[in-house]
Amino acid sequence: MEFLLEGFHEGLRRALTGDPEVWRAAWVTLEVSLWATLLASLAGLPAGYLLAAARFRGRGAAVALLQSLLGLPTVVIGLLVYGLISRRGPLGAADLLFSPPAIVAGLTLLALPIAAVYGMTAVAAVDARARETALTLGASPGRAAWAVFREARFGLVAAVLGAFGRVSSEVGIAMMLGGNIEGYTRTLTTAIAIESTKGEFGFGIALGTVLMAMVVAVSFLSRLLQRS
Image (tube, rainbow, N blue to C red; front, top):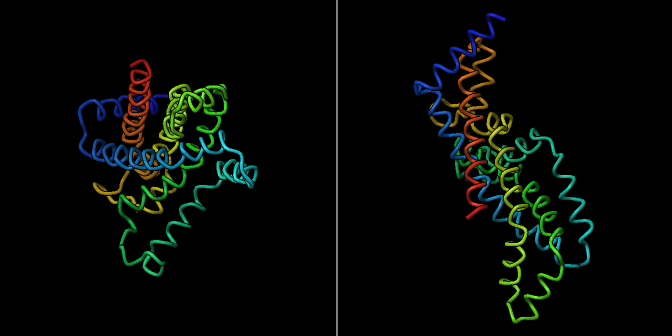
């Protein structure tokens, strides 16, 4: 018990005093997580809208595929992206491996089905007459979609938050594609994994405290945006 208390005390001290290693990892985590969430949302939310509002051949298969991708092991995503951007891969000339963009690519693939499926669920919960009414009043398909998005905004924000929470807590993809390079690709989760195995429990607590604070801060910010 004393070991745990000492670890928590040391962790909080390092987090609150602005330990450079902690905050560098926090910045990398925030950067790659926000980019991945943004890219996944830009692609996933419109895809979710189309799957919820449109009727076309193959829709059922597309929905089933997206839902199955929710359970795709992160190690598979990491291997796929690793194979694409490694020196022997088709994108090897871009020299992206072990860089923040590589992590963003993997995390975007992880977050994409989350944004799409949750977005589809949010749009499907909106009364179908909202879109029909907008079209009847002369709105373009784009403006009608925007009207539906406004009605489903709480669910869509939940979709974005779900995607952010998933990517910010991911360790396998960040480790495989980023290489845990201190000050460059080391994220909070990879640092926690490495430092804890080295016996640096207090450092791990500091990193975990900052990670939780980051997720809570983003959640509060989304609530403020919902009320505006």
